Length: 408
Image: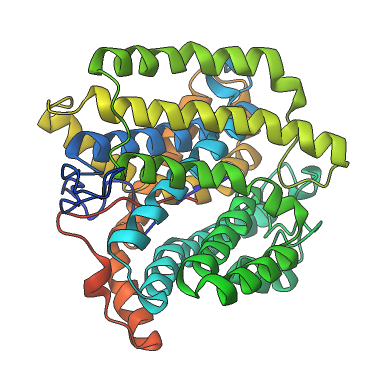
């Protein structure tokens, strides 16, 4: 899964401790006159996006925990890993639209922010995953070779992991046991394709964008509309088109919850792992399923934004906790699987012990929080480094009060 998938220029809830509030925007109305000023990301939506990102990351962890360390976890709470990636895609599209249109006004600034966001987490995540695998190989009872996705070709796969080209066309290159890294091969591709269309002009951007889509291949491009749902949601709000009453918005927000479970219950059999090659018919059905999940999440975000408008939804203490925890969600997404596999290999009885699964999950969370202190929460350090290499200053890419980020 990703990522966290995953995920734009700061960590969930980062720049740590500050709410996400955009500068007011003036929009042209249908007649060309100026419409009311709109804060696209008010404090409520800022925290809510962080909460969605955190929940999605934890759903991926629970899904893998059920497989590796806690087989007794019911599917009702741990069977949403693929859907969580669809959530990441929508969130990412929303955030990228925000930073590109309101903050990162040049391709260089955009590239600086994206690269620093990714590498601030991915470099140490790959290192941690490699260390976990080496411990498993050296001391583990259950060999890594028992896992079908494990690939011991670390050196051969490292360049693809570092360049996020691990999912080109029909390839699926896994760095050791860290299979959730696959989603970055999708999300980074969406960053690049979007940048071509957005920054390079109508004709040149379209030509380069289409060539990039061909280069990344049908598997990656097929799911890009889900990512674009987030962009559409952002622009819909920014244009001031969300005019439904707050009560209707609240009803729509609440309806998305049973709506999601209805889609999952009736159409889940259409789903296919996004990273696996599929026939055209299978790919089409899988896209429809995940796209419907994406539509539900898009409506959920838009409806929440309208329903919560003008009021404080989250108590200050809860908001701070969400921001802080979400500030490690990308790290959690990228390090949890090698860590869980290592634990279950070192202690095979973990799977059957009453407290084994909860302890393992808690250990993954604690490890992610510790690692985030030198990765996600230090993104600005990477931004200065990358900005120096690209000749860009990070100042223009960071909004006042912080901004959201994606997972991956």
